[in-house]
Image (tube, rainbow, N blue to C red):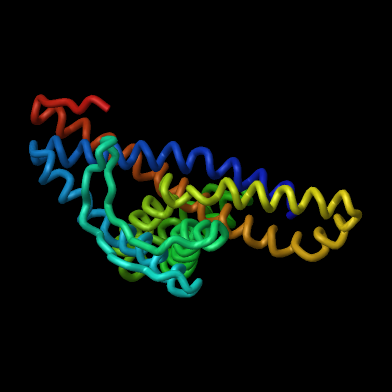
Length: 252
């Protein structure tokens, strides 16, 4: 697949990924609030539900910091509401470092998360045959592959783990704080190298690695979008039933 096509696939998968993830996070919290009618208990249950993904997210920060020689301090997966009203499910304290290492530490949950999703999706859930059948437009083969996937050992456990990881892997605003300067620096250096006539060397050296990375991200994002697209109507239906039974409503 040409590099530009790969990046277009990545962008097209990223947009619904962000939209669906935000919707699911809000409505999962709302559902627990409807059921328990206690904001603190709803927060506890929601954080427990997402715990595997949060552990991988914060563990990725810690592992990246350790590998890059940056001292990692306290590690927590205890949820808390921040002064701005946002919800924080966990954190890892790290020492200050240069922008490049901070950017890599911030991106670690995305890298580890995508790797985990691809592993669980293809190795444990067996989504490969489903994707192949969909790509060929064969509905009967798609249904047969989906049925076979549902009969795999521990299917629902892997669905749950994939769901929590997929909806916990996006870096937070604090994770992304060093991305801007690093990306500007890379863009500036790349422009200078092209201006100096070294563009072909850059393309030959990095285009293959960039395409591989983009394809892996796009595959992970696509699996997440597909899973969330299935979960969303189920979650909406459960929330609707609970609202009808309790006579309550959550305003988002």
